Length: 464
Image (cartoon, rainbow, N blue to C red; front, side, top):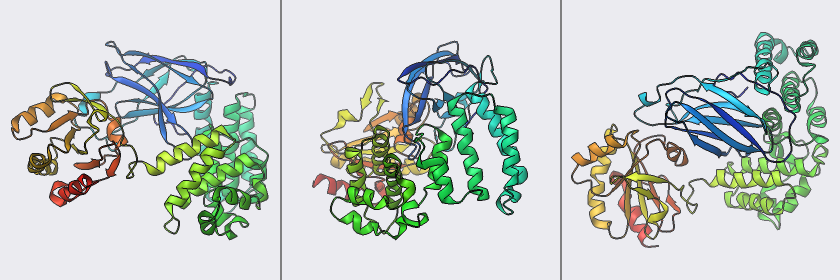
């Protein structure tokens, strides 16, 4: 189960079609006046995360946050950069308790290495609630797999699966929750694939060919991603013989690719076939022998022509995922406090190129590089914005430091509790320099540092 924290849970209702309001209330000791956020992947192929809702924890540690959901969704609850996963069902109300945490012990922000699991408990624990069902199922499943892995994988003892099914039926036979039943079914599909209980064609017919595509079910999509990995170039005995490189460079590659894939009978369902194509295109994009621009063009064509709204979302997310921080794409927007404690937005700087420098007061390499910004600022200040983005948690720490540096006269802003900015720019080490053109688009990511030729990049961007 993809639960980052410990989750104990409550009621059960049938899935309701159409957007329904789901409410999460609770208490988070230690998170007073911080933001709590609910997010979820837009799709389960790219896992492109999208914010669904946010609210402020009050001075007593209590919060209430609501989100509109059309389907049961595996969401992420986050405070600062600490997270827990939780399945939310439409139209339900959850009362949760987040274990106390000393959030402010983390005085420096790096969301990629300092994040911890939030420990979340749903009050009024009901063993028949979806999260509780999945937690119990996964515990039984994991125990069975650990105990029998060699017998399943090396010895292919298929009879063990039959015995396990009987055990699961005794435990969960009365469960009616559709999401859980599909979850359990596709979790078992992974075991059937492991033991070669069925061959690939049989697995496809049982779980995909005449079945609906369950875009929001994490186990369906996990099995989908595994089963169709490198499908169009390697695992499909029929399709792998197709020269996709020539199709990509030919006339109407989207149409010809979709037609070529009909040769594999397990893809007779057009919706499934198109989704398999999109997954395959994402793999081709990261294969050196294929032209990325051509692959991206086909994904965009699929986005425009598809009959299926869910596939359109996948295609849109793929475009964002594959082009994030690439030259010519829009730089992620932010609004942060500057040294005068006024809001400064990246958008407000359009009209001139921008040099972003992500740094911290404890990073010695940052300080040496910023000392080299001063002569560049003096030389290009009329034509280029210089913005140093402090990742120090506290604004006061940044301000105290730059006030000691009398020659740090360009623009400084502070991340504060907006760690999403660091995620948006994939800041994993400091310093990180990013060069943005006058229209707000990425010119170079990462850019060279002042000690390594940044000025040459500045001269080039000014020649545009």
